[in-house]
Length: 247
Image (cartoon, rainbow, N blue to C red):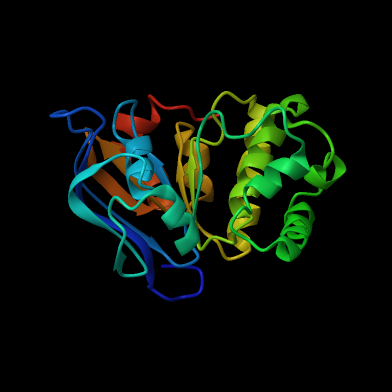
């Protein structure tokens, strides 16, 4: 159930088969729904297809069969820049900021489709959400901490006011303290009304903040349910949570 009680599907994949190399399918018939206002976590073992799923929904991995829909409109294999125009934002796991540019310049890069007069308003909105970015607005991104870089990457993705934000392992490589900060930032973004899909290796922490979760295994749905139900599911605990990060 989405936070506002509606069951409006904003993003979905149906029977999606996708992969990187010819003849090698990473996703083998994956189904996924994101309801309006939700925060949905995607967990599973390495190689299960978690990152491939969000990349396929953002046009970065070819969907060989099946369909991806945004607000009921087929968007399968549309290029990423068209998806940004339609209201989808994406934050990759690595190389997600321009280290030689300032915080302000990074944010401006995320607003390349906006009229100039709107860019400053959007930067102000992002620094209101993330005050630390405002404190470092003229600092080069390469000098930021790992947590601040993730904050900046998410802020840049929010510059176009997306309906949906796709996050690919936002806590990867961060210390436990910075991971807590990143998850708090994700929750703050979700509270503004942005629907979020988050791929995570830190399975327990991810499910704790997620409205619903999907467990992928070998490119298909193994389990799905509310975050709380998955955390308490004996099979999920035995097969997945015991082998994934739980800090």
